[in-house]
Picture (spheres, one colour):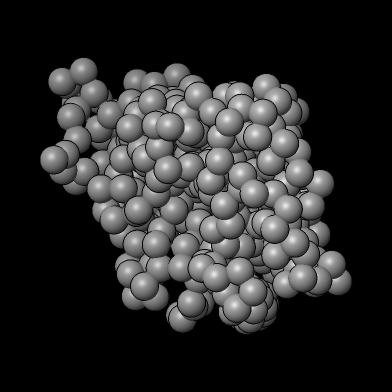
Length: 389
């Protein structure tokens, strides 16, 4: 079995990051492994199965590493991601996004027999659409989780909709769907201002999901529940969720630093950029919105004032507080500083992006580096990059 602490050197030769055209993604091998191990241990401590979200890294290399370390399945955001995972031989998958069109339902059936795949149900009407399609195709016992809205206000049954009453009715009517349990995503934790706020969100979600699950066990029978946004699983010590589905934890990012549920030593992903212009206290780099995105937080939140944390010295953990990445155009980033500096055209800098999931989907590949942050170990494909359907 592959030892993920030892990787083959790129092309058989030692290379360093200064031989790679900028901008590019650099992922620290040691930090990546530590982050994977950390949340795997959290899952084991709480007797929870870990189904990490594929949408963060979209990389079969990292998914393999997560499963190697103990993850029992993978969560995908799209049918296209699930197709890639099944082709790779990954057999336990939750598609945590409602499949609505017949086109996608047919694609689901193409992989249904090859793996243990669960869908989610967003509403009574959505369940009826799925059930009607599967009846026509002669397919039954399709495993489904019902989505519960615990505060993000995006998808799922709300408390006011009385899911403890509605969910049994769904499966009494939709006989070709098999009720597996309930599923939530506390994405509003990404808008928290500190870790105490994150903890409260996690505790509230855990309490409600546990109570609802116990109620459903009485009315339906077997039921499990799944939670697990990265901020919550990073700070909660105890929870009862049978399945957790964090994604961002493999890399963390400037959002994690700003809220406080991760520190600089856990930020495994950085964007390497080069200075292309210097005019006094204005520094222009070759990483713009097509590299870093425009997020100032997650889920359209604006908890961060600029577009990433600047690190002047490659591989260091020293964020330059006086270097503010204040503006982005498509191919340019504008850094403003009020202090004297010796930055020159051609210099390299690093950026810890605000939202690492977003950034990963903007690149075809990324580079794994040794713990010295300069030696390149391997170049890895972002297998599901751009897969949005």
